[in-house]
Image 1 (tube, rainbow, N blue to C red):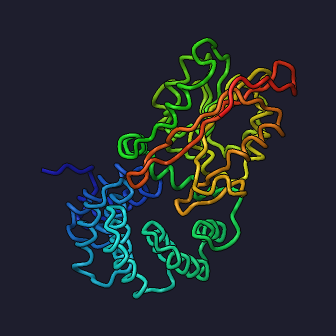
Image 2: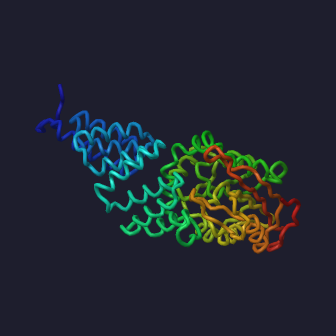
Image 3: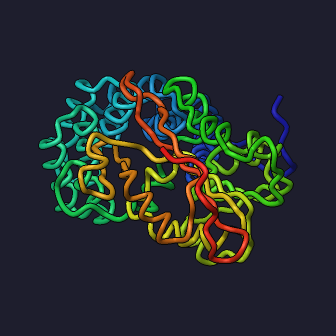
Length: 390
């Protein structure tokens, strides 16, 4: 028999369902997805079939990267309310997450037929078309998003990736943070296990002084979930990681190899930083920055005399056609090796080693990359003599 405090009435099923719904909503807004799912399921147990609860459960499961279960929940909403635009939108996003591109495109069209003023849906439709290689149609969708008030910097970045408009100097911080916070839970498994990502290992394994030198202080610039951390830490007394995505940093913290982790935008942090490092590594990070001048300036200031700056870049078909950097439809920048050489000279670096090797796979094709190992001399402003070139 249910026990209650003296003078209180038992909570009705509807009251319980409402309380649990708002608990789930608060957890969802705070990013506590497992708590949100438990609360919504308990609310549905108290009062089954409530569309608002099912819709939020679907949204939660989509954010947990479980699109099949999200579709099951949202279809229950649509069975009761066939024209629910929010439910149609979650269904479209779930189909896109599953890689069912044609079905997802039809679902986005259905959403926009119901309400053509949804800027975010136009933007997501554009991104789907971009992934399908239908770049002109993608550009038209992005233009519709911008006309309806979507974030101008973000939409401009997307348009530049499909060859419409001026190329921005770097990816918008909002894009980077949301991309990787959303990706954090499955990042390592997907990147390494599915895409065959190897930049972190290639970068560290080919460091010229890795086997003979112990670094007093090392910086993992754009550390993400910490793939480089366990490879660098055996060679460094102190290891610091910096990244813009807070949920990626949570994954890195769980490794227990970083002495300090900082949530910050990389170039701004370098400009404000006063610590000096003997080693800076940055694996597969420069692909989100076009103009590398501020990064090189910041890295040069952050390096102690004799320090080493190691990083990877992505190479494209037009990497040396005159453009210093190019924003690809993948939303990643490629850089010219000539541009890297110019920056190195301008900022007082000497090239210890440079090599070409794949970064990862995309559509089962190797993504070409280059790895650079730059050094500054023992005296401030003095470049060390190069010992190897590409």
